Image 1 (cartoon, helix red, strand yellow):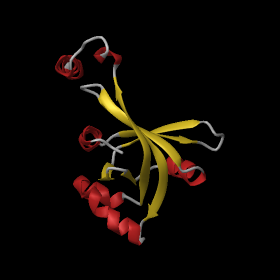
Image 2 (tube, rainbow, N blue to C red):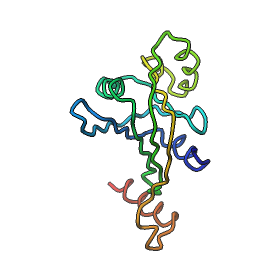
Image 3 (tube, one colour):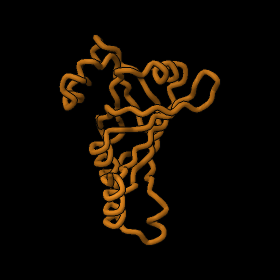
Image 4 (cartoon, helix red, strand yellow):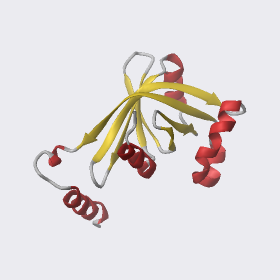
Length: 148
């Protein structure tokens, strides 16, 4: 489901924008910075401060997550369904070591949202359609992001 390139983007970026449905059935988007890859069809994020997202997912577990590298403007979207592993459960305890990279921040994780990916598609800027190369975009965006 997730390609090697998609997994590499997620592992590097770790920041995904999660789209859920709110109680009015409208879209709700929230950034989450604790994403991990469990396997090529499963990703997860640690809930530290996500009451709106968790409430939305409890009512409707469907979601989509977008990951985009701000330097290369490449990424992917992953659609799927979420399940919530509560702190103290066996599932939480089994998943918790995936989040050790965040040190003491990982101790604040109260729930782990496990996403079974049903569809994953690449994303990239239309600049590639116009002939831009990744090296050119990397240079341009690095200069933009590091400018005073």
